[in-house]
Image 1 (tube, protein in one colour):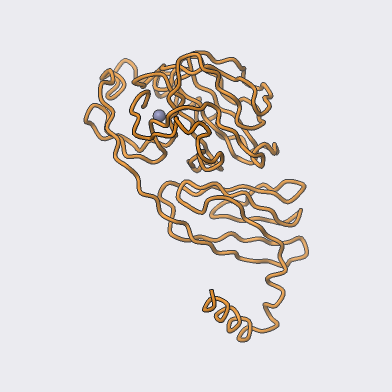
Image 2 (cartoon, rainbow, N blue to C red):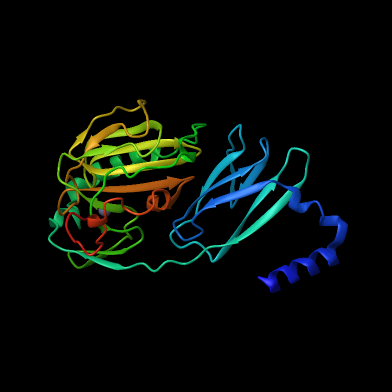
Length: 288
Ligand SMILES: [Zn+2]
């Protein structure tokens, strides 16, 4: 702390008045600065906010959001340019995560290596899913305090390296919450439905929900989809029922999230699972 302060004093002394106004740029960044993290920022209305290759959308109140990917570098920065031309580059560290290896056994082999005659369907569904996660809307649900869509034992975590029936596959990019078939799935925040499909090959019942500013979450393996594309939902609304459709070993909700195309960990938005009896991550039931 002392050394940091000393360094800051030296820095100011060396660079003097030329950068004295730099710290006047109002900027707060709130979230988990970790791989898979989701950061909500606040700056002056009308500012330009640059992160990576994106100019981020900003609300009338000056709020914005960005995500840190599964393998994000150990540090990064965000650039703010105010309407009057003042600017700041704010650097931050990104803490690494350790990803567990998770072996999922007992899946029907058609979900591990799909048969030839299913490939056209899988490709068509991939295109539909891609389309449904493109919107960068002006909605502001992204800035709400999110709630868990379902509570229960966490049976799979973001980023884990997956083996299905012994075969390596892509990392698991969602959080799995085991719950009985028919359990209501609640909208974790306000938004609009961009995909509502009753039966996708890998996902079973599948919903995409747009919270604005490129934040879109995904709910998989649903037994019932209770919403339609274009439908507005409010936080806490029941949008679906838990199921075990698609590539799943039992009933659970797989909850995923994109922020400006980056796949992040939605668990960062909700804190610990509320039911203390449900927090045993070793419980292996209902995963994919
Ligand atoms: Zn899953």
